[in-house]
Length: 256
Image 1: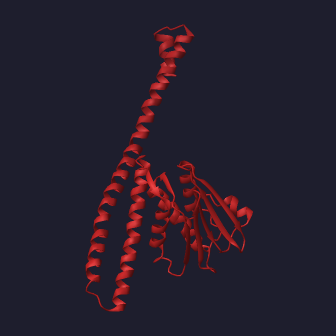
Image 2: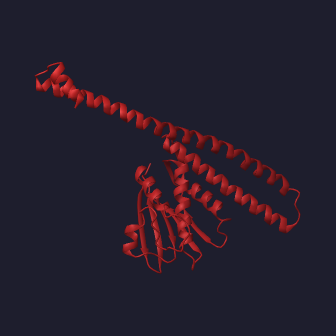
Image 3: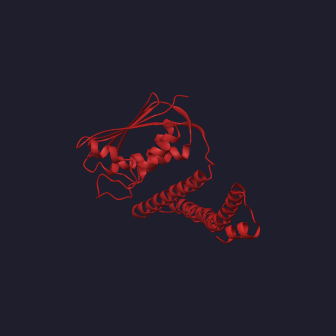
């Protein structure tokens, strides 16, 4: 109001169009200043948080590598079967920590769009992920039928997707320990024989924080991340499931 009074009574501007143009310019200028004052602290906070994450992640790698190296050396001198089992459990825990490290590193690279795409032998990747998960799920019988398949994809992100799908299959197969994994004609199938889901549950599985069984541990965000990765990388994702029979997850990759 003071600005309007100044231009009308003191400067004596009578052209309404010019007056509105001046007021619009002042409003835009004030908006830019206010926005900058509001956004700059937030931008600085996010930048500091990212730098802290990178530094913390870098520091985590050293103790993990140190534990793994020393455990390999200690195992050479261990003769007791009980101590060997303890050493194996420590190594398995370190492998899990290393996996979490790789996932955090991947998430940081994903935020900065620094993702590496490369030629991936999908059958070999599946075998390596199953070998990694076997010590975690020693009670599960993994049945693999894989044909040689090469694709071009984000290997780290795809490993996370495979781990998540296998983890879900095991989690919901408490009454059956068999898990079938097949790869043929650029199509990956992961089939469990657990509790299964009805049509209503299938419609909700990609919602954040949704879990078809409230008794299961976790935060219910895994499948939404899987779908996001598949959509981004042109992978067709499909679920087939029936209650008390089991669930089959189907991933159809683009042929190279």
